Length: 413
Image 1: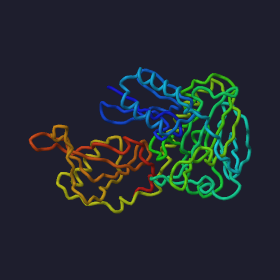
Image 2 (image 1 turned 135 degrees about the horizontal axis):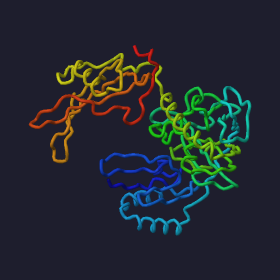
Image 3 (image 1 turned 60 degrees about the vertical axis):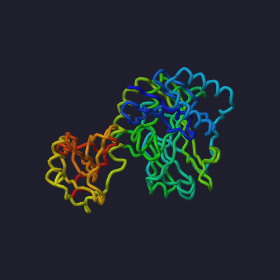
């Protein structure tokens, strides 16, 4: 399999940046994101490092991104060209601290509730750690000028920087999105997890602002995993901020971004790494399960579409779901309403049919490992030759991309 890396991972505020390296798998045409990495360009032949606390001119970054995409097969020339361009142009500049807001960040080894009590400024790696941001008046939405994305999800950004003796350590920076739900958005305080007890997780971090990737990862434990931190004394700097735009919709420079920041001392012991990394996986599982739970079944279950095609009858679909999804106990399913043609034929490059996809999605509410979820299923028939197709089968499930949303089992009626 042959892979090329697109030059997106230059800096946090680069127009082309996805906050993580993006890989294109040219063998199967699918896109996959590399695990949590910051401030690096990853290639099959090695690592090209850029300081994570620097920025690059956006037009230059775009140019380099396109250049890398077109030239990724010649790694030696890429590195030589990039080095020459970087050192011949004054494109690096220290990132500004942002526009300070009238507010405070607090830290504790206990989850915060309605006030900043039992605060601390130093922790050990054996502690659980939580944060709380408060503004003295108004709402977080107004103070940070929060704008919802296309999925109607509001968010803030959290930059976590780890230093030792005043210098940022290797794998010591993470810059991620925090989901901000309506009660918080319209209030004056944000409680958030830093290194939480997995059973008390409340914060949804993501690598992307649409929360479609990286949901459930924990920034500091991921940095510990990637950096293999040695035992020692560290400082953890946390900045909560919003990337604002001007009246024309253009992103403003960082010195105009509203921000609140603070730091704490962190005494790390390598002996605690095993527990931290085990908790990291539990945090991910808990967050993914609870991040976007349904309070009730989606409306499609009360307004299903009708099945009139003889190749996709109610009886046939029920049998296929049971056969192809043996790890799920299907409690309820419906076909969505679809006003177009029932089927879509997918052909290869020669125009020969491969599949016939059933256009209406099948929505399923199901139980798995004692817990209930809601997702959708795409069905198809495989071309058998001579103008005929085989029997119906499950082609894809929504859980193949991101975990299905959970729901209380007693709400499936």
